[in-house]
Image (cartoon, rainbow, N blue to C red; front, side):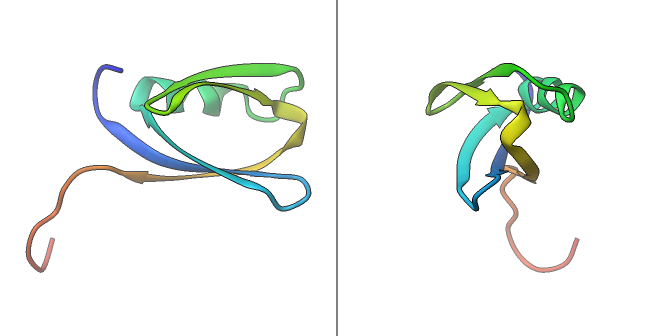
Length: 72
């Protein structure tokens, strides 16, 4: 996974949530296919994950950049 890393949470119909660490490129690819049907494969630090896009309700992302101290 080149580039930055993101911690994402993928919410599904029924309330289940899957937490993953993915590269920026994987997150962008997922964002492009949201709203479609079918399956999408993500390469994550936890291993490959296949998502049924028809069941995805939301994707929440946070940067994995380390921050030290107060302020911006």
